[in-house]
Image 1 (cartoon, helix red, strand yellow):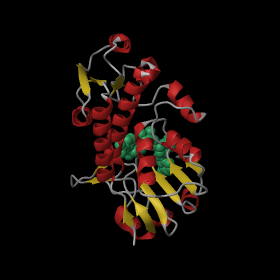
Image 2 (image 1 turned 180 degrees about the vertical axis):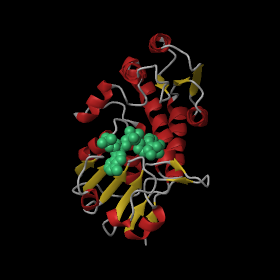
Image 3 (image 1 turned 90 degrees about the vertical axis):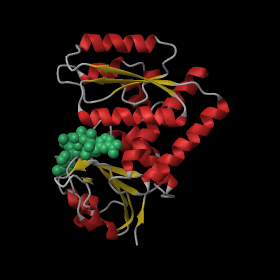
Length: 279
Ligand code: NDP
């Protein structure tokens, strides 16, 4: 019988711990959230981030910029926020409109306020095992594993996906926890066979229900990062949950698995940023 990894419950526990910590230690933090354009999905994410700030007891300032905002204007705003002493964390909701170079935006945010953990300096720190901000979704997955009592050391870990925000940092975190890690992508040959060797399988492919029971070793831990809206309006992941679940020991649902963890870990990063500043 498989166990469901309850991301909703774990993320609430993390936020409650942060709330206590902020109250106890008098931590002062303000997150600046920048949104360019009015993509509905982005607006929902931004709204949830502001709500989470309020819940744990930190400030948030939002900057809702028009779709026609130029790259120079956005960079100028980031420069001002970098210099603003009250702001302890900055994030730009991605994706930004096509006329803006996402890399330039990521690189402009001060590494000490980069609560998304996307700046090359923070990615480099993760790579060489130094302290810094870690991308929220993979950091959240590590918390899910830890708080579910799942050991990583010596385990065969397979990550499907090599994006800068999920797949690559995920692989680095599993490696740092002494997993034996394989990263797969769209050019990988024999994907099924490789996945079938995994004790821990992380699917961050961006393809609805692609991972069926044929990819799963009996008793594997399966983490589903994907989020897709189906024609019937319901959400599903990259994993075909109903087909896979009985072959796993632990599995994350969609919704209610990895999703809520991303925002909880953003809050962890916001508190970390404020603490670093106080030091
Ligand atoms: P990307 O599209 O950036 O990356 C997808 C990766 O999957 C790429 O590395 C790609 O390979 C690989 N891939 C695509 N097709 C295949 C295939 N047929 N076989 C093997 N590998 C394949 O996506 P993200 O990493 O940003 O996100 C992945 C999923 O996670 C999405 O569904 C996204 O919505 C979701 N997500 C959820 C979050 C949450 O909070 N729960 C947060 C972030 C993302 P290649 O590099 O060769 O193109």
